[in-house]
Picture (cartoon, rainbow, N blue to C red):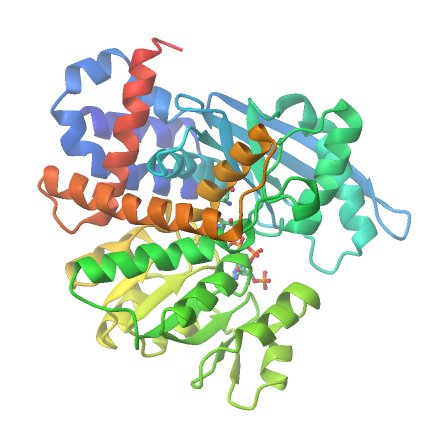
Length: 448
Ligand code: NDP
Ligand code: 2IT
């Protein structure tokens, strides 16, 4: 049996009931097959793939907090420090009821390659909790965040592990966590990114993932002889990534006609009103029904079981920006049948393996999340640089660095795909380019 297949079987056997983690590993290992087979003996002797697929450290902890009724609640807390070969662990904290160890491991594994692709010195990690911030008061969110950090602070630090936002973790949560970290340690240091601008945050970090997604998509289209200007774009999600993806798409001259949340989706043929969307989602923390109520051109659709409405809308470019496995084979078929020419993942692993394969085989340009959404973590690394030098850069400076990074990522993965005989397969290109740097650093650092 080939080394790649052996390690995949081992990962499944050793990590039962973690389907998302298996899926992320499978995609990466399949892409690496050609690279590994060219050097199989050395990689096998060093157990490089086993080490790559096993987190350096996993921290699981209890998060007790008191709700507004005086009732004690208990959540599970996680931090998976996956790989520090090229820098301190770096990756977000997800707060969502669906969070479990397998979800955090898939996200941490993806983060290794994503962070490598940015070209910046950051290792891979991820964390979070099954706490649901939805419907909680600010005081309850603060109580949770303080309890979460009271355990996690022992394991993080500006030079060891630097968490950030993800689903359910935005500026409010990062603020509460930062305050508690500072109180416990006495350190005013860049231990978290996505901080507010008054206490060490970076301009353009809020916009970075969505903007970066569009910078990369624009470059991918350009290199394939197309222009995003005038195109119709379908976006899913209506959180941090989706909002700023929609905003940048419009700035580049495209028309964004959809957004969604976990309960429904909006089709707005006149183009999404981003200012209204921000008011509904960022200020009021409300549902999309409020967006639709305030905008006559918008049609609201309740989400029905097993149906992901937005991908049935005719579009040129699809940007899944909500969550994992939200775009399945049926959706991929609908997109291709409706003439969609490109899919770029704003979310982490939103496209199933079958859907990805279908899109690639049917001539749809496909850029995986670990490349397309790397602008968020890249800008987090720029926030770390600013914290280290105790200076703040202008919006334009950060934004232009972000754009340079995204364009560079696209060319690196495009070239890696070509070099290994898989021109146009950006999944393979991203996995190979991300892997090679990490593998070289791991090998140089000996068996650790
Ligand atoms: P937010 O919490 O800001 O927004 C998440 C959005 O996705 C909301 O509209 C939410 O709807 C929807 N959503 C979440 N879970 C589900 C679900 N199970 N089913 C349907 N809809 C869902 O998160 P972000 O925008 O930050 O993150 C979105 C994606 O982008 C995630 O995959 C994240 O890992 C990834 N990402 C985020 C980065 C960042 O910098 N923030 C960087 C790179 C990737 P509702 O409000 O109803 O729950
Ligand atoms: O998935 C991701 O890359 C993020 N949630 C951002 C991580 C970060 O450290 O900014």
